[in-house]
Image (cartoon, rainbow, N blue to C red; front, side, top):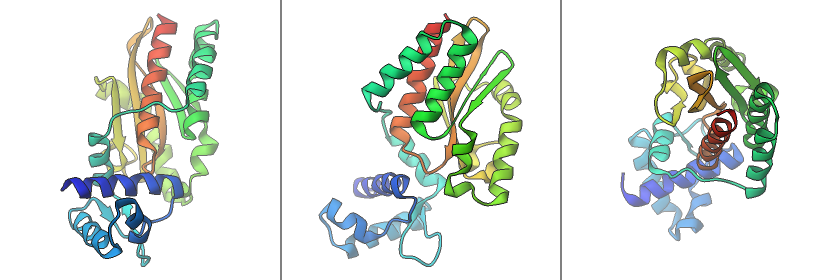
Length: 230
């Protein structure tokens, strides 16, 4: 992938995350100060390599799992609104008891990211934001909802078996060992707690994500929860 193709892929990922609509060359021409024909040629190259695809007859393209993976591998996590971060820190550190701190962390992640927040600690699974998750257009069909349910039903067991060791792990679409056809992304932060050094907090949502801020917030929340519980 050339540097310009990488930039175009990034623009497609970010614009699609905002609009949930396939991205056409006209939408990108002004951003890159290039003709629509030039952008179309670059998009055709990205499509041949499997980074983007045409979901239907429209001229627009959307990222594939491979495209999202290339984007995530090249990006740096970022944090969002500092006021949101401060509010999350107050809710978590000021909770007063372990169970409430965990619930507040999960609820805060769900509210800020508009994904489903989740945590698994010492055999307990916490979830919040399921209604928001199933309101996403990607999960309107029954088959997608079924695959999401399969993933959630087996999440604790899978995390216990796989034990992701990185501070942050991102499983995109078919990278998920369970619910591979769900079109979902699972972003998980591992942290240590008095109950387990394999505690996890994260979000589950569509592959159409604003990855930088969401990954940054998951990392931030995991660190807040680790500091609060320890």
